Image (cartoon, rainbow, N blue to C red; front, side, top):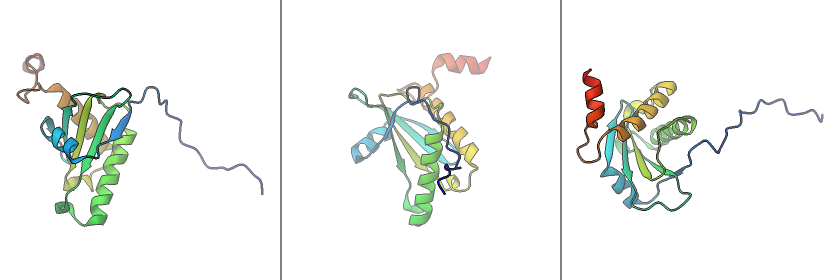
Length: 148
């Protein structure tokens, strides 16, 4: 009766190497991210903007937007949970501690394969930081590399 629990535990993640990501909660923060860079994927769009002043210890902040156009409360919550879990499990994201990010869900997020959803997240984070802040275009050095 007092046998050890036979459940397999998940491998421990090294928290020192994982960037700290917290949540966006205020409307003004969501609006601030909307003024920044954007990357559009099949299942979502990612908006990123640098914060003016980041308190020490506060890492990147991420918010999720899932509108009523995507369905009822059950569908919206399911989409949000899938995106949050994909973000949580993606350890090699290109997040910056002084940035705010908003993931704006699309209808395809519900049916997209989970591994592709994670790959899209990684790619979107790379894309928003690869663009020049003023024009929204790739930096000239990256533009030249693509022409070769």
